[in-house]
Length: 163
Image (cartoon, rainbow, N blue to C red; front, side, top):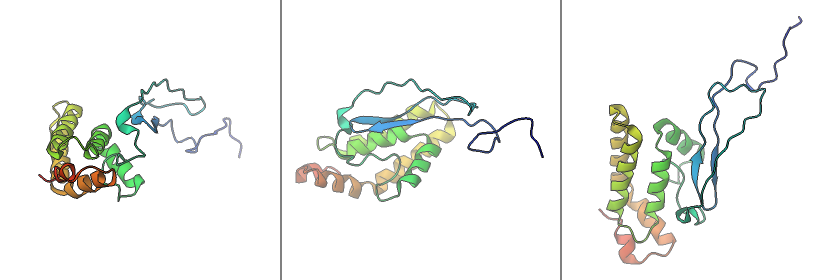
């Protein structure tokens, strides 16, 4: 059984995948590179990306993890973040929860606004954004308070997590 071609691909040459990378680290807001569609695996993929430092993300990962609470394993929050397309909005929301100087209501309002900005007036996306917003409004108080208590916010600042 002799082939006229040679395949050296991770997927046994079923096709060329769409690929992207996520850049993250201390003091960097996680950022995804543009997707390279139908990328030929025989070539090296180069991503030209510049990521500026963001002081909101300099704490030792106090809370930002994509979409979902830190009690959920990372691979599940990654799936939720990728399916929804709200990873940036979720990360900003997580950072807001551990900002002692911002009332939780401001975090919730900005979260919904940031998700809607990703939707571009697409009804199903906005519906999903409403579900996420309702979920964090209903369940987020204890995560906000716990995050603020860990970093030493005053009791008044922790209490601002109550809606």
